Image 1 (cartoon, rainbow, N blue to C red):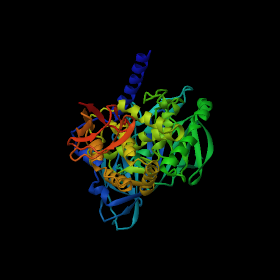
Image 2: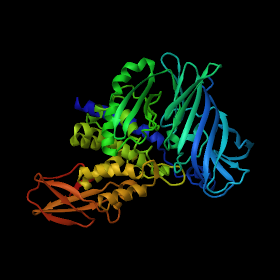
Image 3: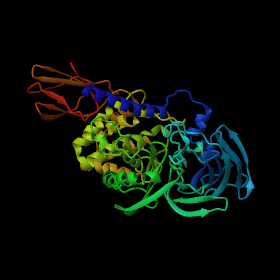
Image 4: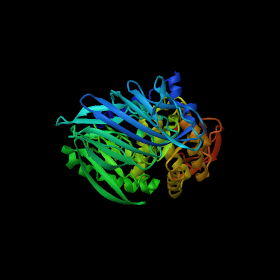
Length: 546
C-alpha cells in the first residue's frame, strides 16, 4: 500500500513540475525582439509612467476586443519617440496626443510613437492608443498566457486573462516592462448584459447601454504591475465581508459562478485566515485602498493584484493533491494561499527585470510553509517545505538572463523556498527573521527591485554574510555537499560542490547534542564522543559520509 501512495504522490508532483516547465522554457538564443521587450530602451527611459485608463469592449461570441488606452507620463528628459508594446495579432489602429494623430512605426511587437509636441522635462503629458483584434488564446492558462474563452456548465460565456512572463501586451497596449509601474489606473470593460466584468481595484460605476451591453468601471489607487491587470467575465454572483487588519478595515469581495456559491462561502473562509497569517509574517496587506478580491476563473488561478483569480475547484491542496507529500499540503487551499501570498511578493515588491522573478516565486512558495507555521507550528512548516524538495530539478540557475525578458528555472519556487528556509536556520532567531520579512515589505513598499537590493537588505538586517549562499542557490545548479568521516574519536568534515569561499554554518547532532559547524572547502576536524551523527534536514544540502 505504501508503494502505491508514494507513486501517486510522485505522479501528482510531476504534474505540477511539468506545468511549471511549460512557463519556464529555456533558450539561449535571443533576438532583437527579445531586447526590445526586455530592456529599458532609449524610447522607454525618457518617460515615467503615471496613469492608464484602459477602456475596451469584449465580444465573447467573436472572441474579439476593441478599445483604447490612455497613457499618462512624466517627461524625465526631452525626446520625441515613445515606445508602446502590443503583441501580434493585436493591432494599433491610431495614436493621438491632444487630438492630433501621430505617426507610428512598428518593429514586431514594439511600436514607436513619433510625437509632434515638444516634450518638456517635468511636464505630464498623455497619448491615447486605439487598438483592436483577436487576442492570443491561452492554450494552457496560466502558464500559456492570453485570453481563456470558455463557457460555464449553463452555457454562459466564462472569460479571463492571464499573461505572466508572456506580458500584458499580449492583450492591451502598454509600457510592457516591469521596471516602471503605473501609479494608478482605471479599467472600463464593456460586456454583454447577461455577464459581469470583474477587474482590479474597486468598482466605481456600472453603466448600462441601449445595445444590451454594460460597462463596468474599476479604479486602482495603488501602483500595479502590467501582468497584474486582468479582465474576468462571467455569470457571477457576489458576496463580501470585512476583515479587521493591521491598517484598519479591509473589504473582502468574492465573485463566483452562481452554481458554486455554497461551496465558495465555505472554502473562502480561508481568506481571513490567510490575511491573519501573512500580516503576521509580512506586515500589512499592501492594498487596503483597493480592497481584496477572489474571483473564480476557468483556469487554475493567478496573482492579479487586488483581483486574485481562483480555479482550484474548491479543494484543499493543489487540485486536491499535496505537493509536499507530507499531508500538510492538504491543510489549506493552495491557490488561495499561494496566489494571495503574491500580494506581498510580486505585487507589493516587484522585480524590475523578469530575470529576478525568484523574488516573486521563492518568497511566495515559502509563504505556504509560513501559513502552516502560523496555524500548525514550526514542525509542520519545516516538514512541508522539506517535502517540496522532490519538485526541484536543478536544471538551470534560478536567476535568468537580464534585458531579454528571460526568467530562470522553475526551481525559483521550491528551491528558492528551501534557500529561504535555510537562511532562517542561519538567522536562528524567529523574531528577527519575521522582522526581516516584514522589513522587506516596508522598505520596498510599492516598489520595483533588483536581486541585489533584496540580498543586501537581508544581509544587512541579519548581520550575516550570505553573499556566497545567494550565489550558490540562485546563480548555480550546485547543491552544497557536506562531506564527513569519523576517525579515532574525531569528526572530519568539509564542503564540496560549492562556489569559491562558500561560507555557511551547519547544525548537526552528535548523540542528540546539537553542534554548529562552520565547514570550509578544507578538511576540518572536531573531537566527538560517539558515532551517532545526523545532519539537520532544515538545511538544504546533500550529505556524503566517507
